[in-house]
Amino acid sequence: MAKIMVVDDETIMRELVTDTLEMSGHECLSFADPQLALEAFKSSSPDLIVSDFKMPGMTGMELLQEVQKINPGQPFIIMTAFGTIEIAVEAIKNGAENFIEKPFQPEILEHLVASVLEHQRIKAENKSLRQQLKGQNFIGSGKIYDSLQHFVLEVASAQATVLINGESGVGKEVLARAVHYQSPRATGPFVKVNCAALPESLIESELFGHEKGAFTGALKERKGKFELAHGGTLLLDEIGEMPLLAQSKLLRVIQERELVRVGGETEIKVDVRIICTTNRDLAEEVKDGNFREDLFYRLNVLPIRVPALRERPEDIPGLVEHFIAKINAENGYAVEGIEEDALKYLQKYGWPGNIRQLENAMERAMVFAKVGQINVSHFDLQNQAASSDTITASGDLHAGMTVAQAEQALIYKTLEACEGNRTRASEMLDISIRTLRNKLHEYGYNGEKKS
Image (cartoon, rainbow, N blue to C red; front, side, top):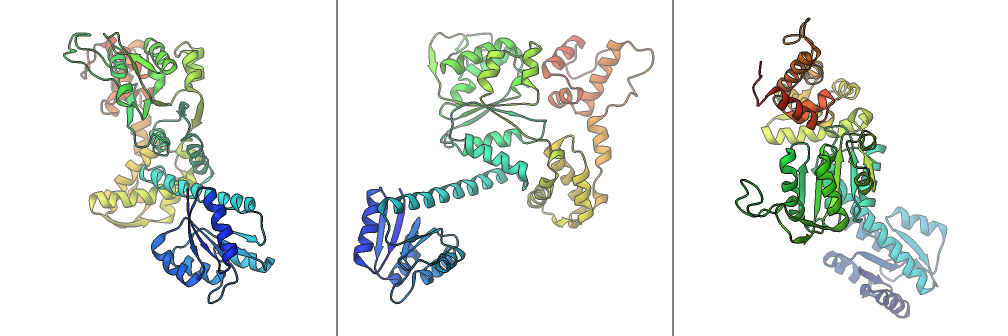
């Protein structure tokens, strides 16, 4: 419960307020002299001050003003038997959370104090969340950002599964981490599994662990990601890429809250909150037979879509400011800011790579700027877009090729443009990582082109 300072020169009223609040479970510091209360305030840091208005030596309003100088925003309730609209307005203007007129019923005071403390709790949570999101590069100022922040606050304390949908680079993992760090599981582990990067043969062992000798190369027992995330949160990144067989086993673990390691027989209890991310429409994947319907409904309990950066240009100024500070610190640059026309240029751009692409663009611009202001000439977004999002029909592509040959050449060119990053290449080609992996296996590709 809260630590509350009670200030009133009238003994009966002071004891009534103190008794009422202590019966509600609060710890009270009681003062008849507002000057002594002010001195004590400097070292006691109460959660709330409840003070009379009219007192000898110093009024409650004067005490309020002095307290606000020391700790702006300090929660404060004014009590008075001389209630007027003018006093109430002045109290609120000077920083009081609320105003209560004497005489009052104890339950009225209890309700008012509870309301003020709850309001302060929410404000503290919002501040903490903003710091957490900022630390994770999730920065914004518009309605979309506010709605995402509200979502985090609403779902953090729940145990239900969260499903985050959005394009690559929008900050899905950042949002997942924000949910974890605002939850009761914040002190527990946060474990991430990239479902798109795991071969089908290893995904079951990676998730559920294996016993010694379970398969060739299993020289000792190994805990899976579920066990490693016990007491915390497990992030299943790009869940839409998980093979159907693994999906059925995942469903059982979610339902039963227990697992059996590969090659084992012992059932192991797991306490894990699951958050999933995907850049695919899982409802459509269900229709196409690529995703289990029963698993989809298990995961789609608390869904949220993170909009693309092009849908929230109002967030770009804050992101730019953040990246300037971050890149300056990392590289010893002295960039002071960005010119207005350059900022407008960034806000008009489509950002197919979202926040990740913006950060890369800022890093490039600051390499050339180093000091002073960033201007439009420091950016090369058109060439960046061409290299990252458009594979032209030249080089390996030519007339007379079969469709299969053209497909193979296009996949090779895309991989080359992505510097071998298969996840990014699959996104550019608009195919699943599993499909890309199968195609490369068909071509005999192991990092080198086959004729």
